[in-house]
Image (spheres, rainbow, N blue to C red):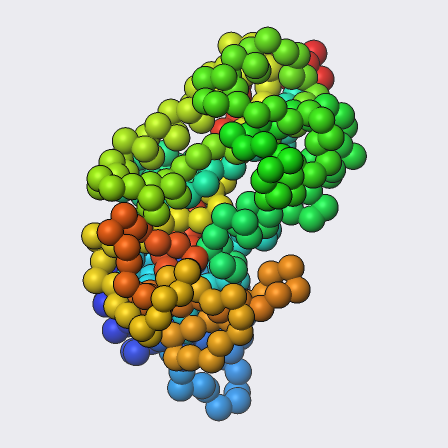
Length: 368
């Protein structure tokens, strides 16, 4: 199979239909007029039709060796999961939604996954796929890119992940009759925390550190349990820190905690499926040339709490309310001195987050 870069693929499409092995999101970087086929037989039928042939470029994402005498078979290894995606994210948003897992679909996927004895969900407040890719690339093999299909903020992202009805309720119906939650915040004083742990009753513990969570889990029987953990990510340092944050260290701390959690279950000889999902990423100001879209004193620099018309705006809905998010690289106001990054808008950095899945190797007690 011939290996080509993105520019060569574009040039080939101007000359002939092709069969191409590519990343699905790469389709968004191709011209909009390209007709995409998922089945090579459908493409062949179109080419062999006696009807007038279309003049638009045609690409099939299925490669079959028996048709190489008729169509070029190519492999394009261009990676679309970079800041380059910002060039097309707004204008091809609906197209991209069809080719990537969306945050609102994560709960369904978690419930469908093989489970083992225990299911664990670690919700991280602020972690982008981009930062995992840059600072912890060894984890990419376990990471699925997830599109935040809405405003990239904590209160919406967390609720999209746990779903409605929430994961805890759905797993209860699947036999996970015990539940346990961990959070840094007091439910009675934090409405979002109360919503995230809806259905847990009084089985939610407030903790001060991740080590405290591990200590609790070491002491109790976790067979048949669903464990939901909220962990601080990079959200806080993006907004309220005087010194430049050490993003690399924080990303690796988060992933090391996830690994420690996995080791705990292996040491306890309990089979488990562990999930890590982030509510949103962060667009770091020092890495990008952000531009003012308007001059205002808005509280939120990257989104509006109402519908808005504009060339660089995407309107979305959440909980029956209208919102509008700004596309990359625009801001509603100048950033404050202690704002190292922003989120809430539409960009690769804010809107593509990691979903990590790890399965412990211990033998399930249900199988013994």
